[in-house]
Image (cartoon, rainbow, N blue to C red; front, side):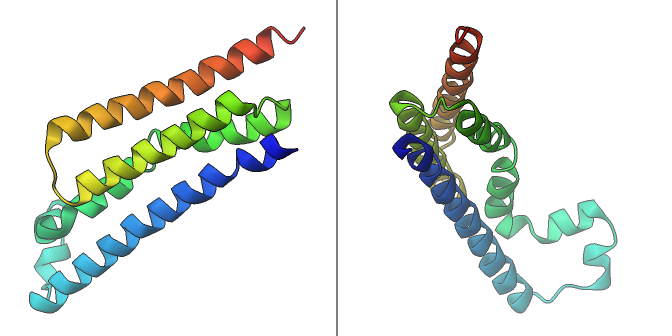
Amino acid sequence: MIGQVAIVVPVFVLVVVIYAVWAIMFVQRGRLMKAKPPRREDFATGSAAMAYFEQAEMPANNLRNLYEMPVLFFAIIPLLLITHNANHIQIALAWAYVVLRAIHSIIHVSRGPVVPRFMIYAASCAVLLAMWVGLAVDVLTAG
């Protein structure tokens, strides 16, 4: 039962990261709109809106990124619970994934260096792949 609860905690933490990035985006866009009130033309097309929000776009870019690979993370957790494969290795990998994603978000939102950000992103993808390979092996060898 401990593994069943422990595997869910990193999910809650990743949700907090996502909402934190959303809040940063919301505040930065609000400040921009206050400093430079938008005109009708600023939202006439998608590209016009992108150009208008360009100064405050990094949090939005990161928020979109948090709905790409993390979908696979959010998908594997119920499978780990259903198959009772939420073991210590999967829990450690889940925490590693969430920590890497949080670090990636901090670097991304703060316009940090691209190469370290990419390396952390790649590491998080490798950790997520390890979770999926581990689950596949556990399920296929369960007899």
